[in-house]
Amino acid sequence: MGFEDSAAYLHPLENYAKAARWREHWYRNPLPFATDGVIMRQGQRPPAQRWQASAPYWIAAWKHPYAQALAEVRKVSFNIGRSGRITPVLELTPVRLDDRTVSRISTGSLQRWQTLDIRPGDQVAVSLAGLTIPRLDGVISRAAERVEMIIPQADDFHELSCWQATPGCESQFRARLIWLSGKKGLALPGVGPGTWDKLIENGQIESLLDWMTLNHAELANIPGFAERSSAKLLASLQTARERPFQTWLKAIGLPPTGSATLPDNWQELAGRSVEQWQAEPGIGPGRAAKLRSFFQAPEVQALSHQLQAQGISGFK
Image (cartoon, rainbow, N blue to C red; front, side):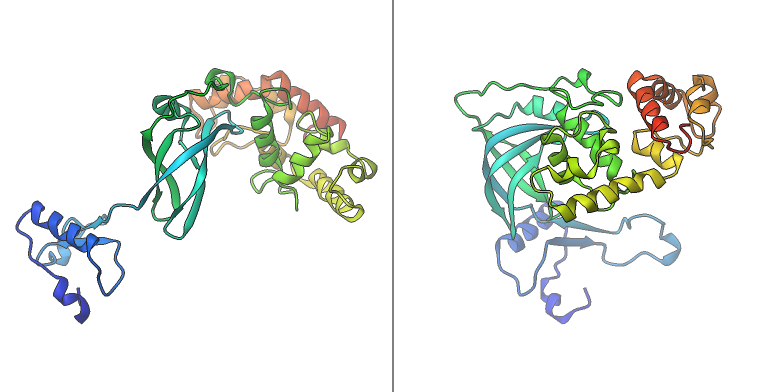
């Protein structure tokens, strides 16, 4: 390895079993330096002419097992993203893994959660993927009493669902607002999830663009918004009017358009057929159908009318 301290820890390997024994030995016994696994390599490095632009075949790392912890599931919630993807999240009794406290963890997908059928009271094994990201490894034991839950149906949520804060749509609608004000949307300074939560909780927002008509008096009456903060928020919201048409399209949820050249005119885009979209570079049949559906959706058309009424460039 090139370091004097590690020279005593080099051992020839005749087979896989011997490598496994040394790995287990060094995992279980103290060493004078920190390690996260072992390295196996050929006795000699191959000549340079045999090297490739890929991971070398003559050397490999075999990582130690990740540290695991047992945690009890306190609650299961379902986050619904802007595109309608449902992600179950487990709220856990906090456990320590290395130097981190883990209190919530994602199951990755609704399908995986349904397969594991995790309910409050179950015991699950968790670890840290890459030593940083909490990861669900499996169910260790199940609660004797299975808690009944309201489970969102995947067919009810998609790219064109939940444009308003109606019952059952809270999570996806909130995700739409967060995207709209975020870096990939309108990039509104100081406007984040907490801002939208307050506005929704106080009945100031029911549809995606209601915030455009808010005034200083309405914001000042919201608990938690002082005179100065409400004025600052209003100024931030007003900057949206300066954003270009293309930015507005992304903010309200336009599907990816590849390398297509888009005119700064809503009516022209809304009038395109599937065939016209597919004629654009980088847009296949599936994407063309999604773009056509987006512009023809009644909820999206209603947004375009609102933006036209607000004098936003490109929607006039």
